[in-house]
Image (cartoon, rainbow, N blue to C red; front, side):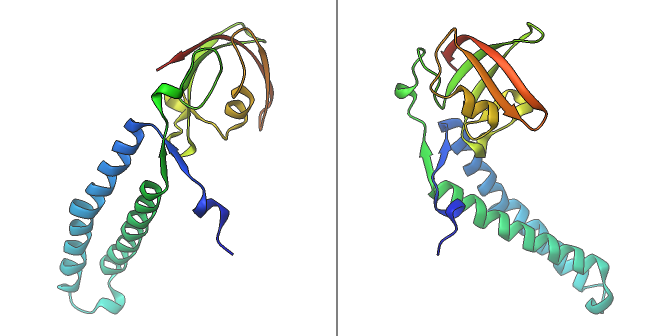
Length: 163
């Protein structure tokens, strides 16, 4: 039976897809060659059975190859978020939402993205995260409650916009 996570679509913005393609190109052209050079140099040191540099380079090679496979899978499963389907009356993937914390009255904005593009430190949250799930389908002015690992968080939606 196929792994459900391997089969699901990967929601991406055009920008997110471009970044994945650039990362894949970097791994395939530069990083793969760099690791192969490290392996070749380590072999030149002689006995590879007790050569830590060789072992380290081989582990790095395995990581690079796994990352290439993962990136290729993500690109193959990518479903682009259609910019024309992002509306400003309801929160959807691709929306930027300005929220006010119910407890502190502080406001902040988040862009709702697919999990592959999630980057909370840059205010890009996954549609699968507790806050992202709570926001989807909501309208400006609505109160939203999200159950997070840190506890319940309450927000008021101040604004919904396109990026």
